[in-house]
Length: 115
Length: 116
Image 1 (cartoon, rainbow over the protein chains, first blue to last red):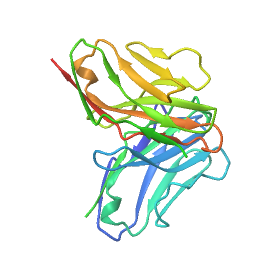
Image 2 (image 1 turned 60 degrees about the horizontal axis):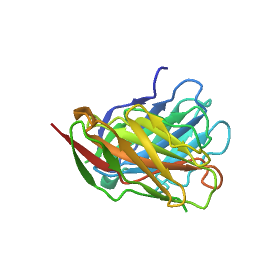
Image 3 (image 1 turned 30 degrees about the horizontal axis):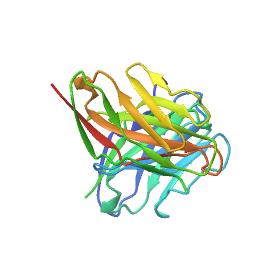
Image 4 (image 1 turned 90 degrees about the vertical axis):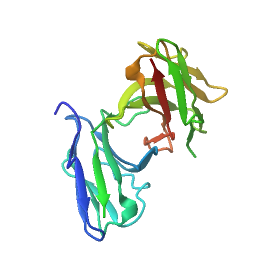
């Protein structure tokens, strides 16, 4: 597609429920990233996928968080047993490749609210 | 370890004047890229400018320029002729080429207010 698409744009869930956030990157972009942005804060790296390589999961805050990328395209971030501290905007980005010079194109984000 | 520091939580500038947003970084990797992103109140992240660690000249993109001082490990963003639409959050970011694994880390951001 023309840009990075994320869905849903907003999600309100009850504490303890599982949620799935979806990211559809730009066609042809081999690298895909998930970040979390809490209110008024910077971006916290979560996970990164590059082609068929094993993902870099070093930023996932707990084992309640997981992500997959199917067919080198669409990615799903899953949060199990959500907690109130999981409330944030979850941003997905893609880049043409993973080299140092490749800037990101970001999606509009999913605003997750855990009540 | 990678680190990005933006020491100015908020900045004010008069419309049509220039403003410099500070960014310092720390890395032991000789190959890295430095980026600036803009985040308006609508929330989307917009790529502004890129500087490679081996680039000899400072990067420029329209009204944006990056003042790259490698020895000082600083990568300040200069916005010339500020416009009201420049009011936004600005993030400095860095990506290492080796052990960093190509993930980009972001600073805490600087909120810029442009006054009419």
